Length: 363
Ligand SMILES: *Cc1c(COP(=O)(O)O)cnc(C)c1O
Image 1 (cartoon, helix red, strand yellow):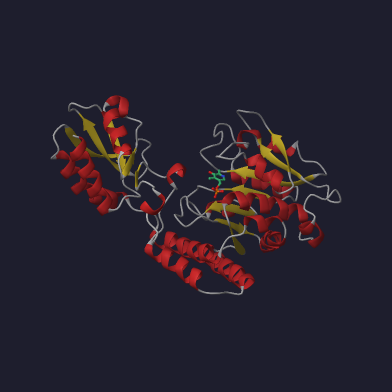
Image 2: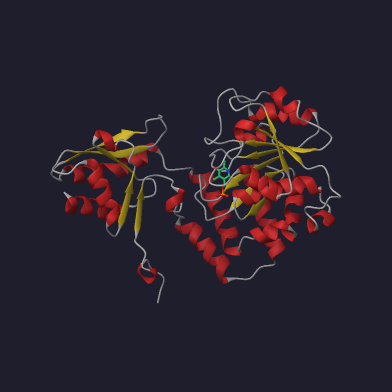
């Protein structure tokens, strides 16, 4: 039986809610799929595949070197292990050995977050010990500086909406402290859109997630100084083995990075153009009034905003949309005001037609 939703009794899901981890984050493009397919259907000298895709990405990003890993989380664990091990094969085979004592990783307290998993768990997996700097509501360069000891291995900075933003030192400030004390700075920029900024700011290693902003397959990317990337690669013989990534996703993710750099994300104008016929058709349905609205935070994201004023209220419509097959997930933040929002970044034309059909049935 060929693969399908039916084979496993799963519901088809249309994701009109945005980038949601609980729905599988994002879809990959045709070019990424064909790269994954080429990977799946061929053999490679794997060490070569890993190094040469890394060099190709490094060239695109104008950095010394790069290494694809299985996730941003794996990137954190392997970067920490790499810095602690300093390229020692003994350490790679004995990652938690007492013979290596320099294991402290300084992290601003407000960056010690849970992104679905605590950052600290990944640091520990890499053999590091988190040393928090600063306070719950602030961290200045001197707070980092005062935590540096003989046992400090690296400084870790989490660039993310999950962290405390207020009174927080910048990546460039953290890099300055790191340089002054000859320590490497690792930046976790898993969900960030800018693939250049943090290296420019002075980070030694920067980590990205494959399926978030870059919209690739499940993967992670570590970029930065050649020496450190070599040490990260060595972890493939140690803790990295439990985080192995397949040849299909190595090639698919490389393609996704290239596509992301040349096409960027969908423009606001393109979203508006795709939304126009969708909104017109919804306006023909009794009890619904639709318009195009910009993202509340002012980002270049446009959405279909649908006011419900029929026999049913917005909350009932939202739950009925999720109930049937296909299950349609929407943005629910405005439901109390009688409004349902449709984020179409991961919705194609055919799926928009299915949404309209479901709305007609429900109303
Ligand atoms: C999502 C996220 C991660 C983990 O990314 P994965 O690729 O899913 O492992 C790490 N750090 C931050 C800040 C994140 O948002």
